[in-house]
Image 1 (cartoon, protein in one colour):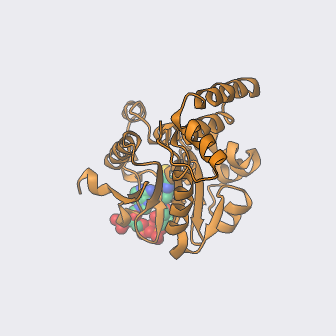
Image 2 (cartoon, helix red, strand yellow; image 1 turned 90 degrees about the vertical axis):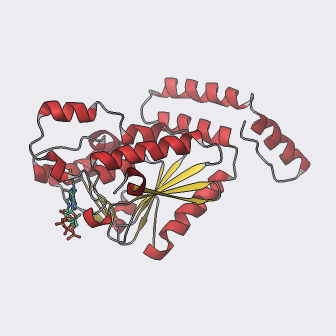
Image 3 (spheres, helix red, strand yellow; image 1 turned 30 degrees about the horizontal axis):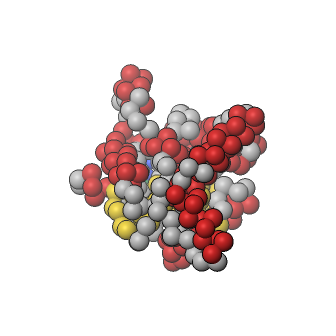
Length: 260
Ligand code: COA
């Protein structure tokens, strides 16, 4: 299978739907798949006609069932060091200047959870199952799970998942606010794309700045975060989008944002 086929790209207007396509292995992340996903995210980032990305898994069983466990066998710490000093898909998702919505359609485990956690919004189907099962393999999450999961669901809920390795269902994920919405499987992609289209209709400059400022809330002290927010707010005043957005409101019409 070529790298292109490991990630399918389907455009729906300004929304790029990226499908992780290794369903026979429950979309487990191997080296080639990570590379293909990095390439697809880079392309989406550079393409000004793409305003929002939706990330999902192929088939009806899994979003992503984690790292490819077969690749772990026989791997030395030096091999693993080399792998982990490559560009990270988790960082790429978080740093993408466009929002990414995870449409979680089944097993969302290990590295799959970590991918979902690096996305900006998570929508799940009722059949989704979530877990950080690394302790079952004698390892720990290595794609940001120990850091991002507690920031999303709190320390206790994160410890319960990471230390027991137990899976939770979609209803429990919603209760923990690990996901924003749960919908029937047949509605999942349309719902994720609908949210993406709402965002895609806004000012791209403002959306990028808003993503950066809001994400910084999880990593910066309050004073620093507020400083960043002010700087990005002021930056928006340099954009044609701001001129258009304000003028359109005053003219009582729908804005057409140039994205500059
Ligand atoms: N890495 C490599 N292969 C994986 C995989 C993973 N993380 N998850 C699933 N697969 C493979 C299975 O080995 C199997 O391959 P085979 O058909 O060649 O034997 C195929 O995907 C289907 O998996 P199977 O276990 O038969 O499907 P299932 O629907 O009964 O169970 C899971 C699905 C996800 C619950 C189960 O596969 C599983 O527990 N996977 C590992 C999850 C994990 O520990 N992830 C964290 C890794 S750090």
